[in-house]
Length: 262
Image (tube, rainbow, N blue to C red; front, side):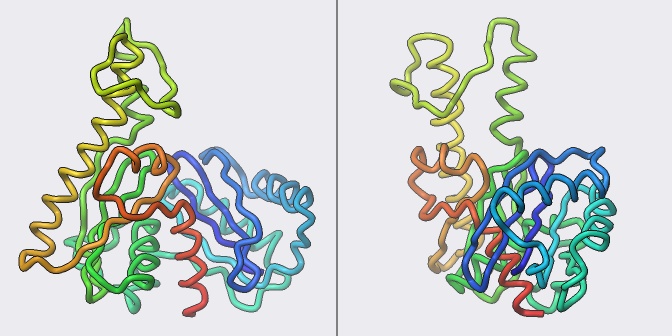
């Protein structure tokens, strides 16, 4: 089995693959104070509840955008999950995957590992110009050429950040749940207006920004596909016309593919 680990700013998403099949997936908060032993306790418990024998883990791949957790995860894997590894732990970075994707940004080392993994996973599937939108703590638009070149993208505040800012900085605006849709674009009360602003507003933002990217990425009218991933992707996608596919497991599948290439 392959243990895939994606450490994000808000959540850590992990998965276990048996061959090509994702047989287990977990999503936990990324606690920056967590130690290697505490990580091991959590995942031993999760594996036990799922009836998974950790001795069958033959490979581990890690992508992290939280430097303070890198050492804890590397130590955890070395101490508790390395006994039966066929290859050493693979840590994704711009250096370790530069032979797979050309990174055309000014400072390749600044690009988050998850963004590169998503770019590779999407390109392997479609092999055309792509925009991958990741709805996480931040919302990132990652642009990939048909030649498998990571060109850069845009970064803006995520939905949860925007909602927190509204409720903490505006005395009369409450915390709201956007998992249920607004009754219409024109909100007839504060909660409906906030829901409309977030869902329809971010949907319009996605469509507008995707179109501007299309003009720059595909000036001759070449085809371009827009994919979405991340915890909030399924909420916003229905309010857009440009998102063609939502794949919440894109990063884990990308990690699986990267490990297979080694």
